Amino acid sequence: MAVTEHRTQVVLFPFMAQGHIPPFRCLVELVRHARTDASITTVAATPSLAKSLRVSLAAEDDVNVARRGFSFHALPFNPAEHGLPAGADTSAKIGSHQLTALFNASESLCPVFCRFVAGLRAVAGPGADIHIMADMFLGWTVDVARDAGVFHSIVAGEMLRRWFNNVPIYPVGLLLRILAAPSPEARDRSSTILAWLHKQRPGSVLYVLFGSQCTINASQMMELAVGLEQSAHKFVWVIRPPSGFDVNDEFRPEWLPKGFMEKVEESGQGLVVRWWAPQVEILAHTVTGAFLTHCKWNSVQGSLAHGVPMIGWPLSAEQFYNAKMLVEEMGVCVEVARGGDTVVKEKVAEVVDTVLGQTSVRATMRWKAVELKKVIRAAWEADGDGSSVRVMERFFAAVSRVA
Image (cartoon, rainbow, N blue to C red):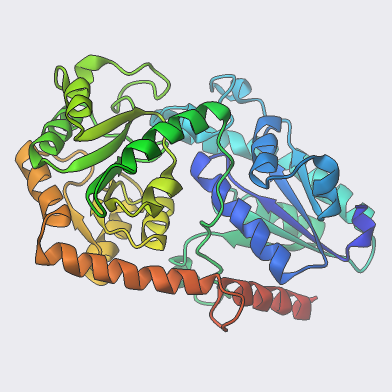
């Protein structure tokens, strides 16, 4: 569809981080529902990211995408020019020590993004509204919007309300409904994991994952493994190399107790999965009783959206605040460790049993998690003044009045 057929242009620009792509995918759907007349362009730093976003929209081909008012624009970002690995188009492909370099490198996109917005404005013609919805890690896009004379909003956590008293805040989340389609290889692994889950009792399995970027150190990994085994509870652990090693390295047997993986899999107690697992399917499964997580907001949303309480092990950034809120305010989480703290197998086993065993704590956490699940699901209903769609509609109404 030609851009001139739309009077409202919405540009969504996620940061180059694996965990930031699915929320922007959901944001596309919100915009589509709230502003049906809009043409939506998702900007990606590289062609491969653009392809990932296109696949996540489950489009049959580019023509169908265009007919639905969606388009994708890839910027010419070359990671190697900034001291990063050649294929590092997302944070998932680099170590945590390279994140600062990725943030700095993103600013090199400013000139080409500025030209893209200027071209969009020229094609859209006079009277058209153009809105840039940018990731909070792409703060420099504010200057691009200001120079081009278009609207700008930051997609970020609701904590911004405390920082910017005079700036309108529109809480359109939670942005977690739809994820990118897995590759054929991922689907094969998914079927193996789900087949194992189908054999377990309801609420009996602990899901363990520290996200796509964060990881624990080697000694913590060793203690966690022994603690999980000693707890005697079932688990699925998605495992990556410990901190200090390349995230893309092959996993080494010496990072776990000797024979650990073979022992727990042969006994049926658990599965140790390398690199990837179907998180939504696992959290949605009736056998999943808890989620041991680093408390990154995507993981928190996914867990609560399915009524699953958590064992918190925050590792960096806002994860510590999230864990504190989950424990003290929501009552759906028990912490087992923080950051690089020393953790012992006995503590791991104790906490896992508290959350998965026949305890009053488990019953209370489960009830609270289910209640929060209802609240989250209601936010996605079409009716209701507090829904995500309605808030997005109010956002567009507000910026239209400004125009």
